[in-house]
Image (cartoon, rainbow, N blue to C red; front, side, top):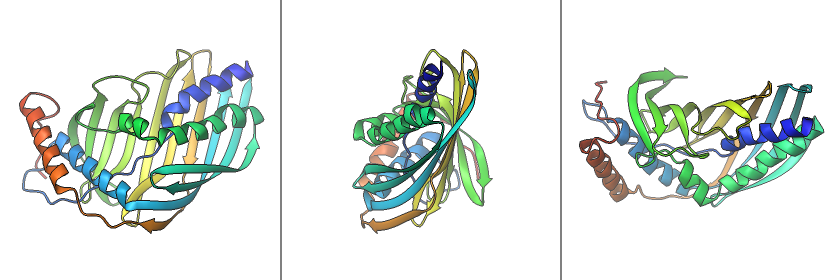
Length: 270
C-alpha cells in the first residue's frame, strides 16, 4: 500500500514540475487592454526575457507531507539547479525523511521537471489565447505590485493545461501568481489536485519563488508538496531587442479573435 500511495502522489504532482519566465513593458491608453491583449503582451515579453536569461544558479528545497493510508510520512530534498541556454541541470544535494517518498515521488519530480524544460512541453504549458479562454475579472495589488486578474480555462483539456486564476503585473506584464487545478486529473486515484504558484522579481526577471500543491487520494489521504526556490544567482544575461513585429502580429491575432467571438471582449477602465 505504501508503494501504491507513493505512485499516486507522484502522478498527482507531475503537473507542477516546471516554472515559467514571463513579463513585458508597454504603456496603456485610458482604456485598459483586453484579457487576450494582456496575455499576448505577456507572451512577447516572456520570449524576450527567456532569450535574455543565459544562465542562473539556485538551490531549491522540496518538501512533501503525506497523511492518510499507512499513517503520516514526510520527506525533504535539496537540489542544486543550473540553468543554461533554456536547459535545466539538477543535482540532488541531500535527502531526509521517508526513503520511499524521496525515491518514488521527489526524485521523479526532479526528473520530470527536466523533461518539462524541453521545448515541446513548455509550448503545451504556455498560457495563450490560442490555448485558453481568458476573462479579465479585475485588478488587485499584491505585495505592492498592481496586477490584472484573469480567469483562465483551456480550450482543450490535457495533463499539461489548467484552469484557475492568474495575476499579471500591470507595469511589466509579468506573471505574479497562478492559483488553479489541472484541467484533467493526473490519475483516477486522485479525486482532486490544486496548486498555488508564486513568482518574484529578480532584477529584470520574474522567477519562481514558491509553489504549493495539494493532492487528495480517492482511497483516503492528502499530500502537500512545497517547493521553495531560494535565492537566485543570475550570472549571465544577453541583450536583445524587443520583438515589436511579433507583438504587433500577436495583438492583431487577439483582436481578430475577439471580433470572431473568441476570448474575452471585456473592457475595464483603470
